Length: 95
Image (spheres, rainbow, N blue to C red):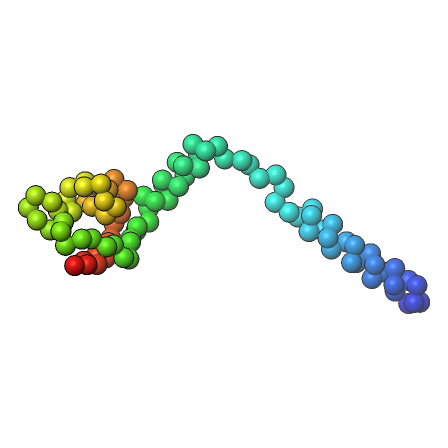
């Protein structure tokens, strides 16, 4: 093979690769609506185990009148965990 033909063949190969990649690409990706995306995310959330590995709770919330079973406006409490679908929580009590 002469030198010009060999160079031309190499150039064709180099130019063909990007074109092939474009042709084999994903094409148009369907856009999900916000509602569809939320529905899909909720489905995933229901199928997986949701856990929080570090929950800080105050010792002052361990009384009969105030405890983690009540929604006290704090971040970590049983009503919020149930509403959010939390399956497992590791608690850290600070005093």
